[in-house]
Amino acid sequence: MADPKGFMTTPRQDWPRRPVEERVRDWDEVYVPGALLPIISKQADRCMDCGIPFCHDACPLGNLIPEWNDLVSREDWRAAADRLHATNNFPEFTGRLCPAPCEAGCVLAINQPAVTIKNVECAIADRVWEEGFAPPRPPERLSGKTVAVIGSGPTGLAAAQQLTRAGHTVAVYERADRPGGLMRYGIPEFKMEKHHLERRLEQMRAEGTKFRTSTSVGQDIGADELRTRYDAVVLATGATAWRELTVPGRELTGIHQAMEYLPLSNRVCAGDLEASPLSAAGKHVVIVGGGDTGADCLGTAVREGAASVTQLDIYALPEVERDEDAEPWPTYPIRIYRLSAAHEEARDLRTAPVADADARLFAASTLRFDGDAEGHVRSLHLVEVDARRRPVDGTGRTLPADLVLLALGFSGPDRQDGLVDQLGLAMEPRGTVARDAGFATNVPGVFAAGDAARGQSLIVWAIAEGRAVAAAVDRHLTGSSRLPSPIGPYDRPMVV
Ligand SMILES: Cc1cc2nc3c(=O)[nH]c(=O)nc-3n(C[C@H](O)[C@H](O)[C@H](O)COP(=O)(O)OP(=O)(O)OC[C@H]3O[C@@H](n4cnc5c(N)ncnc54)[C@H](O)[C@@H]3O)c2cc1C
Ligand code: SF4
Image 1 (cartoon, rainbow, N blue to C red):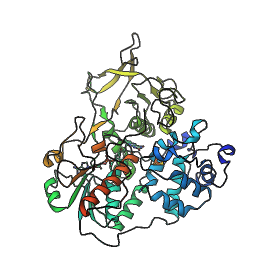
Image 2 (image 1 turned 180 degrees about the vertical axis):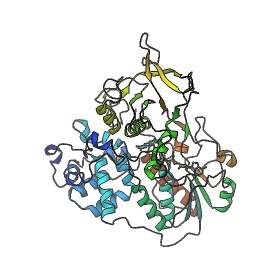
Image 3 (image 1 turned 45 degrees about the horizontal axis):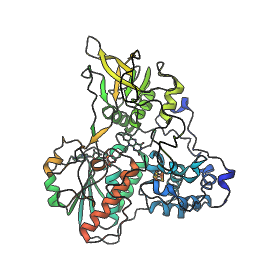
Image 4 (image 1 turned 120 degrees about the vertical axis):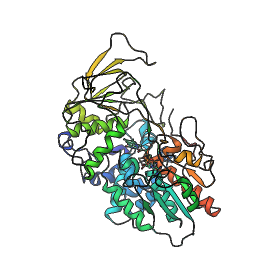
């Protein structure tokens, strides 16, 4: 580190967000452009190089955080870029989208705000592209082996890049019209502008990875045909089977799944649509589900000009500080009050007159929906619940609701494409694809990775899964592998 006392002399400073009034009028990323670089070297210098870096352990990719903090504090960007890419194929994605479990495990976080690790990662990643430190790295020799990757989310992309660079000939099959998985059609533009994705895809194409979009495996091409044509198949189809809310009135129009709603606004941003057919403009919007997908709906509805927005969370209002007994350092605290950019926007604009602190109502359980004579939803009835989800007497409440968005999570891959049945894949009881310790399914030559096998997770886990399955496939094809394998299929986040 350039200054061994940096953590004592420099306070934490995050990448500032643009003013709420400004950012809700566009779809650009919420951060102030160009405001990270001037502060980041001093921030990286807050790293204590503590000897046993729990941050490194808390990151599923095993990112070499103290090493690149040191290099950034000395402004050695090229070396920092090399160290970062040694463990992470796509740091510009995680630098923007990761919830940063590394920061929860930072030793400084025991009694001070953690190092802004995610911001340092993002600064290196962006600098990489500005300086041209990420040229395509095509393999020197081809192995003569072929691999089909099904699904082009972060898992499929990471697996494809690793296998292509190892010399195998890789084709990525994607049912959507553009590659990217949930990073393309799911995660809103204001969290990550799509040009970051395009740039990586261009790099991957230049390295030799082929993309076959608008091709649903199981429907447009048989799964068995892929098995015959390729030496190995990687299933990275994500967990897109959404959970339902079975309460009276669910059949009314105007009630949609989050993943029916969000891709439409992605398409508006991409120029495919002039306006979203499900736009929240002028509507009273209620989002059922307190997680990140719900927050993405919130930010989207605010930008579309909703009349009011309320997000319902079944859990009670969490504490502002980590509960050291229940979720001690260095674990990632789940029950802590977090105010995402979208919550900040909804709160400051007071689009939810029914809500108190921000646009969220906590400990709220939906009882039923009521509609008008045309069968369109007009209101949502809810009740407050206790910790065991029992209704609290006298807490019933009705919210106006013209658009209801369900963001209740996902159970596993959807089965409509017939892929699972065509291959005869064994499934876990919770609906995910079963695999062994080497990422192999019960079908010879077919491997499974990412949300499809792990269940709904995070980009950082998806990239780690992609890297690990690539190592397993490489070993299967050649008998050994020098590719890194950061996680095993049964590794789990560091939570209580
Ligand atoms: C709205 C939303 C917001 C999120 N925000 C964040 C965030 O901010 N940070 C974070 O870390 N995580 C976030 N996540 C979670 C994260 O996006 C996922 O964990 C991650 O994308 C999983 O990657 P994956 O590659 O396994 O699957 P996916 O990204 O789901 O990709 C799977 C791909 O497979 C394709 N596919 C499926 N079946 C077939 C078939 N039969 N043939 C061809 N193609 C097929 C799908 O079309 C899709 O493109 C979010 C999730 C959602 C839903
Ligand atoms: S990928 Fe996530 S956990 Fe890993 S260093 Fe980056 S922000 Fe931290």
